[in-house]
Amino acid sequence: MKVMVGLVIIILIIFMANLFWPSNQTNNRKLSSIEKGLEKSEIIEGTANENVILHANLNEPSDDEKIKLMKAEYLILQKERKNLKRRLSRLKHDMWGLSFVPEVAKKMSEIMLNSYKLIKNPDMLGAFSSVKEIQDERAKIEFSKNSIKQVREFIDNNQKSTSVTG
Image (cartoon, rainbow, N blue to C red):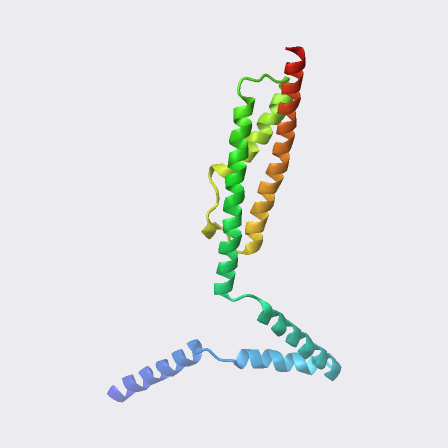
């Protein structure tokens, strides 16, 4: 009876080891079946492409380098947000007490609100997964800065028209 229980346990252990032990057997099967279907010239071209892919992966920055690049890019993003906030505050100060045509006022309000949305709850560094995403955020801020120029023109035109009539 003890021999029978021992034999069952050994069989279970071997079965579990075979089932869950990682192996390259599936990769070898896939490669051999692929190689059988390809001609030698295609195999040579395939290995050349694999070498190109390997070289491309070698040029990618490591995780530490990626983090350093992201931090540097994020510092630039913070400076641009700070400048945008200053410009918005200045425009708000300059608009104080002025009256605009309703269409112009609506357009200005829309531009200002969209700009304020960018700085209201800014994404922190951890919200970005790559330098590209931080650069995209910088592009949004740059677009907002260009939109604010239009608001500045509206304010200047309004001040000129009030000084001429007043």
